Amino acid sequence: MELKNVYFSYENEPVINGFSLKLEGGRRVAVMGGSGKGKTTLLRLMLGLIAPDSGEVIIDAGERPSVVFQEDRLLSWFTAERNVEEVRREGSPEARELLRDMELEEAANKLPKELSGGMQRRVAIARALAFRGDPLLLDEPFKGLDPDLRERVAGVILKRAGNASILLITHDEREAELLRCEELIRL
Amino acid sequence: MKRLLKSRIFRKTAVFACWMLAWQAAAWAVGSDLLLPSPFVTARALVSLCGTGAFWLSCALTLLRVFTGFILGILAGSALGVLTAASPIAEELLSPIRSIVKAAPITSFIILVLLYLSSALTPMFIAFLMVMPIAWTNVAAGILSTDKQLLEMARVFGFSRAKTLKTVYAPSVLPHFVSACTAGLGFAWKSGVTAEVIAHPAFGMGKAIYESKLYLETPELFAWTAAVIIMSFALEKLITALLGRLAPWN
Picture 1: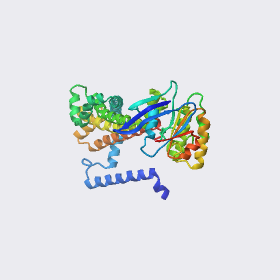
Picture 2: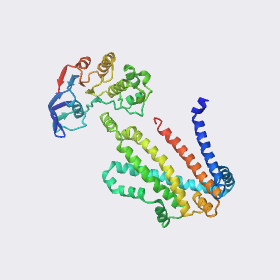
Picture 3: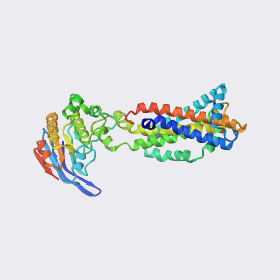
Picture 4: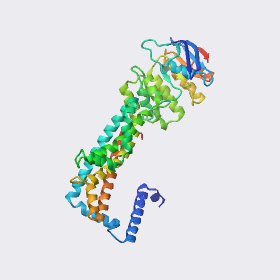
């Protein structure tokens, strides 16, 4: 995936100004910046949910990004396991296995409303890993997790993402270290 | 004792008994079965009616008309709901029909429909006409209120159109659909029986209500009304239970 000199404005207010980035070959990049700096807009551009005003978002044929949105976006009518299972692609680990990795095995049959905020977050991460997309786009994935858990979850992400490139959006530089990001971009 | 007071069945029974006592007291105060029959006299009239074939035939035909009208109204309303939610042009074009059906007095429709349909079909059509806009409004609202973030999630994770319909839209619309069914069923009964009162089909609960009033058989009038309420209540419970199986998360 590549962004070439991308511009995006919201209500005539420039949000992204000539942003360029190449995300391939297992590269891990962290994007940091305060609120309203366009971090989530950048992710939406990369997912093709919005189109840039100018510039290019190039996605190679067969390339499908996987994402942990800023919000969990779980289907409230399905159990945690079913939420993961619905997006699982052939060759991906079983939903139960991913939930076990996320220390959620006992919550597999529970509905999202029966889970704490941190547990829902981990279900969203497990779902992104079940899709096995490349790149893996993570918008504040550790929100609501305590420091110990962050470390363990980061380990699972690195293990399960394999050779996929990672783009991390965060406020916290330590999270970029947890995911061993090689580059840090400040917006 | 505390547990008994907390029991839902006990509370419901107590409330029912309370209202029966109030009715009985009012009947004693009035002192005439012709003006206000007591619960006991009404129950006796109902039991007596249950022993006649005409009662069961009237109940069966009214049930058939109301239920058919209800089902057709739900189907047509749901189809229109999907259509108008998907197409703003269809919404512009068809919304006046919905507004007219909602606003016009039911008796005007009954008299108008009697010009074109038989007295047996009119109650069914009226029930259909009353249920259709309810289903239409609710289904369209359900589709339009489907969480956009979930739709984006489905798109990003490559859900097919059919899968998005099944896993995102259908569960979002279902609570609205269930509301339409429960509200619509009540309207179907009220409008269907009212249409029978005016249309006079050969057999029907509405016609029997009208004739009881005509011949000043007030206990029978109350008994028929009680029968309508019991059947409406039973059908609502049945449909709610069936729909509850479709939406276990509710």
